[in-house]
Image (cartoon, rainbow, N blue to C red):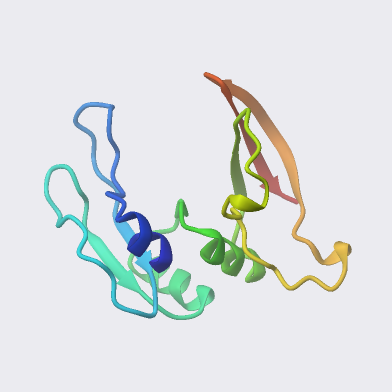
Amino acid sequence: GGGTARADRPALNVRGFGPVRQPVRIVVSASDLPELPAEDGDHGPLWQLSGPPEAVMADLGRRGLTRVFCEGGGELAASLLRAGLVDRLVGYTAGMALGADGRPSVAGLGLAHLADAPRFRLLETRRLGADVLHLWQRD
């Protein structure tokens, strides 16, 4: 998302695995973004897209991208969940508590009732060092 790109200036590339094919980097934002690294051997192409999530995903599909890994902030995650565009959730749990001082991984969904929440079923739980990975599939 645009907020994450402005705050973190992420590289959005694969690192630490030797030479690999770099992914297409996508930033979804309605406003200007900071300059991110240009395409080179260490960074794939960079696209900036804006619009409602359904339109953004349709645009990506027309460009041949049918699998998208979203590692954005809470606002982008919430917009994709509200639009019903999330097939899988990947969550990480660390042995620390941030409470209200942390940033939410998903912004408000505007749910009137708990029954309106998107539902996922647990596929896998795996320990990664001191952390735990949870993989969930949409019901």
